[in-house]
Image 1 (cartoon, protein in one colour):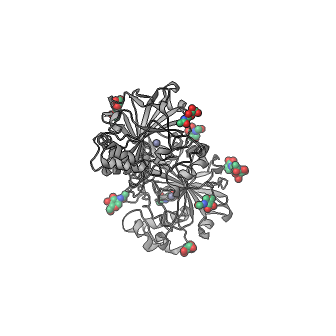
Image 2 (cartoon, rainbow, N blue to C red):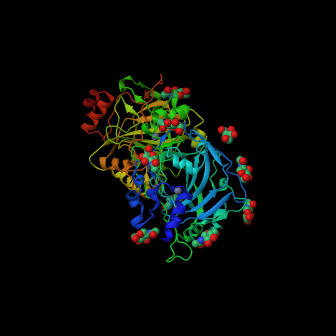
Image 3 (cartoon, rainbow, N blue to C red):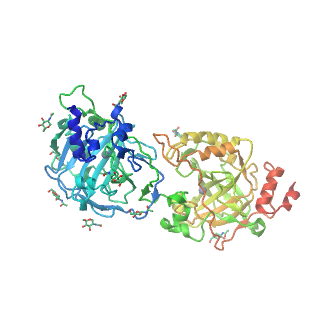
Length: 590
Ligand SMILES: *[C@@H]1O[C@H](CO)[C@@H](O)[C@H](O)[C@H]1NC(C)=O
Ligand SMILES: *[C@@H]1O[C@H](CO)[C@@H](O)[C@H](O)[C@H]1NC(C)=O
Ligand SMILES: *[C@@H]1O[C@H](CO)[C@@H](O)[C@H](O)[C@H]1NC(C)=O
Ligand SMILES: *[C@@H]1O[C@H](CO)[C@@H](O)[C@H](O)[C@H]1NC(C)=O
Ligand SMILES: *[C@@H]1O[C@H](CO)[C@@H](O)[C@H](O)[C@H]1NC(C)=O
Ligand SMILES: *[C@@H]1O[C@H](CO)[C@@H](O)[C@H](O)[C@H]1NC(C)=O
Ligand SMILES: *[C@@H]1O[C@H](CO)[C@@H](O)[C@H](O)[C@H]1NC(C)=O
Ligand SMILES: *[C@@H]1O[C@H](CO)[C@@H](O)[C@H](O)[C@H]1NC(C)=O
Ligand SMILES: *[C@@H]1O[C@H](CO)[C@@H](O)[C@H](O)[C@H]1NC(C)=O
Ligand SMILES: [Zn+2]
Ligand SMILES: [Zn+2]
């Protein structure tokens, strides 16, 4: 008998990742590599070629409010011989010898009992996890295998071959610089299970508990849910998968200890280290992945788009929300006392911080620059600016002018100086002053935006940030910079929490940018940098639809729309006039 055969038979039973009575898997000496590797499993075990296989890449999860917290019971239990560790050649596994560790809740229809937990890890820390999260693979993944309590035992549960027979919890590991002491009870026993031998069961220290190695799950639990399979032959499609976002720390030194373990039996040569024991990703197919936590987005199909914000951020349903459709220019009241915005420090050349915040490209301003005048009544300090756009150039701006959208909108966010910070300013109805600038597409690249956008390739993914090149805020404004014409109204942040603390100033003069430059923004991603190639994740659209005016006043600081010299070609004039609905002015101005 090939040495693997015995291990294999034992393993399949003990892992219950496969069952002896399924003769198809019985004589198949499966591996993670080579001619018995994952791509060959379906030839021997047809179920492995099924349509609900695991693992999968987790992304585009739809929010489901029914996925509440899990209720874990007994996972703090300790006791000699309660947790028995072994090496059966495919993984390091800890069998749970008491059946009093259970869980319910978490959107599960009944109670489940823990049977064992085990790990999947890589030959280096760039790989190892079975699932990937937004295309990112982690160095290791923990699986805690529970069976439906009413089915009696894990063997009977698997045997029943129901889609909810098992519930497996997956936790990713992330590399930390120092050791995770909670893992010591497991890692310290690895020497005792160095060789593959399923009969060699070693007790973990009597003070070990399953809970001790898990991340803190006391607060709201963020996890992803889908229906899948065992990730080893028999590949039975009997698992309700739950993959958590909160991770477990592990040091490189500790990972190296796991990679020392052998997949070969004592005396067997050549010795082979056990690692890369993860199955490649399977197609999600027609299955959907759901998630327990509401992360607001612009994607209605994920149940987290603008129409759903109000369910989690009450203020988003308020009566002074932004953006709005600015009425026809002739229906807007001229307010003589508004005057013009004065820009202070906007002409200084500075290096600022540019970042991808997952929703937009944002530049945090370093230095104290202000605006005043324009009816604001006080000085407002610049904090940051960012953009809103869409997949195509026929829309993208948040504000619209009498129903017409622009391809992009720039928001320069200021807080009232006397409030000292954005956080404090949000507590006051006049806390923020946001300047909105519309864009128009021009055939030529914009030099002013060129150097900024060049840096955007360094912040392609969510969470990335870098320094801008030297930029002057003034360069970002329309060519005409004196006595800019604008609309004024009281509104809100256009993203959750939609705080109603914004005095809006929306300028009539557009800024020019090329289609190619717009595309650079659309290529930014709302996901962190993935480790596999993915076909999703770009920020295609990030504008909020217009909100009801609810009787609010919109004012303007001009009587007659003047077109700026720089952008005052006939075509711009025509465009603006159409947009604002005062075509007679074009003739007058040109
Ligand atoms: C997998 O197989 C390939 C080709 O046989 C080999 O080069 C590689 O080292 C193997 N990897 C592992 C982890 O065994
Ligand atoms: C959690 O489960 C235990 C045992 O099943 C039960 O006694 C307890 O009431 C549950 N708690 C909640 C909050 O559901
Ligand atoms: C489970 O069993 C262990 C060992 O017998 C014991 O220490 C623990 O208190 C039990 N837990 C529960 C919740 O019954
Ligand atoms: C949401 O989760 C609950 C609980 O698991 C489930 O019964 C329901 O079908 C889910 N809804 C959707 C749309 O997935
Ligand atoms: C398990 O159930 C699936 C779906 O009903 C079926 O296709 C498959 O043949 C069953 N497998 C076994 C081993 O009973
Ligand atoms: C496997 O472990 C058992 C129990 O520790 C031991 O008796 C047996 O000799 C081991 N088998 C091999 C092949 O090392
Ligand atoms: C757990 O037990 C081990 C050995 O039995 C001991 O070294 C360790 O200090 C104990 N840990 C705690 C938290 O009691
Ligand atoms: C960015 O600029 C700031 C201020 O000029 C400087 O302190 C910081 O070191 C720079 N960071 C990088 C990554 O260049
Ligand atoms: C905005 O609100 C303030 C305070 O209520 C009010 O004085 C001001 O007139 C409002 N602005 C507009 C444009 O309605
Ligand atoms: Zn597993
Ligand atoms: Zn904005």
